[in-house]
Image (cartoon, rainbow, N blue to C red):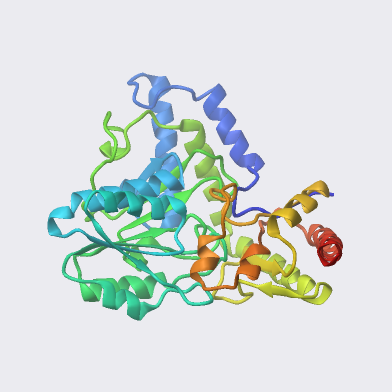
Length: 385
């Protein structure tokens, strides 16, 4: 049996999305910028996908821009907003637990003269609203906060943060990295009143290499690359039609019955949480099994067992988990997220992330628990020698 429990890293493409991708590669292969029929039919299909995604996000189709993924969407939003609004100030704010595509973009902007405030989090991974309020000033032009943390699943109170930001400085723009929350937590862009949102296809059973960026029509933003007038000039380059077709289909599938999808992954997470709690001793949950955390992510430390050793032991038995963010887990060093939470070194060193999708089954979780129990017990005996 195989138990793929690394769905926060990427998800298996669903058959319906695969068919849409194949359609773009075999039949509707024209360039959407071409004026002939082959181009126009693709342009129409891209518009359909854009409408599907806009409806799911709760915004207008003209506010959706296709990108190569969540990383590029974050880069365009953060750099594009900062550079477009720098005459109003050069102070920008983010948190210490953001995805590398956000943190490294803020580090880059620091080299360009921007002043950055990195917000702390508490032991559960939540940002203090008071610290945000105290950090915003007259020259603050941008705040960027993730909706759901990719390592722990902690959900930040985006609506409250946005209200606080606009109350302190109505000219400050607010970007939200929603790559891990889109489809799994109900929200609408216009009701949140945020200025930009980044999303990704491969986190919701769509293809890799495609993402989306919502930008409020009133937000001032510059492109960060030069080229043609694709995506209203904000993201130049011929559109990734297979990716867009597949992305649109994946979004349609989840939002056809989003509550069913959410209930499915919530049930799986609770089931696995209870299994681990009852079957394995000396473990620490670094994320909760309540409404404060995403329904698909669980971070747990098996004390005395290094996460990387356990990961590879489980891999032999076709159980696939993660030791942190898939975008940075191959780099040596402790998780910057768990470190920012102030967790002890032995807890960080033994932490793994388990993440679910509606494709997973309880039988897979039973198997994964049995294998984890076996390997944790075996590795602990070795460590005691």
